[in-house]
Image (cartoon, rainbow, N blue to C red; front, top):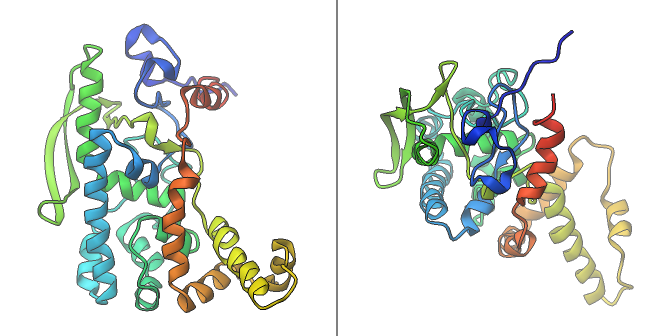
Length: 305
């Protein structure tokens, strides 16, 4: 069987020159999935004008989103998720078309259903990262798709701007929904776009992507909950326990036992999550993927056949 020939954005511009040191965006394979994801923390902590605008849209959406779940407003919840869907424009993800209803409004309503109970007990829930920490089976692929929908207008404008630098003009017009922070609602827009094989291309700034998020339920469990256990044992006059000892005492054979432990302790002490929010900047300090890292990743998984 012949291997599919992969084509990249750089094959259409700049004389086909490869290497992320030559571009501000990710040079994705346009006819394949690229296992990279938009990272909300990298967007939040960036000082670029584009990221600051994008973060405003993201936080605006999640303020409205968490408000709806705190009020148990099913109509508002459904409206907020009505335009969430799998996004193929970035060519990011684990394989589009194979996720069933997981990234549709209906699928997300089911995934987010526990939020109504969680948000009543954990008042510190207010960030995009909290979904990946407190909800099982919702991580990079789901959150990145949701962010892409929210930022569709931002990404569309970024794409046309970047391609213009190489003399590439829009070749189509695409109609899409995006989150409008000034109106606090989804809005539809028709805009010039660049399409390949009748599919819109959305370029993504290379500074906001990662292969894997640095925040996760396991990191939260290790850095916050196990550390709190250690400090508590020391304050109680006991020998300071190692994290391995504490882990062994908490471990169970129950599926999702880490999730259940995190949920139990965060509901009891919502300050745990607030503390984690404060620690996030140090986890992400100087952790953007460099051009060399992207090249190394893409040389073997994307640039190669």
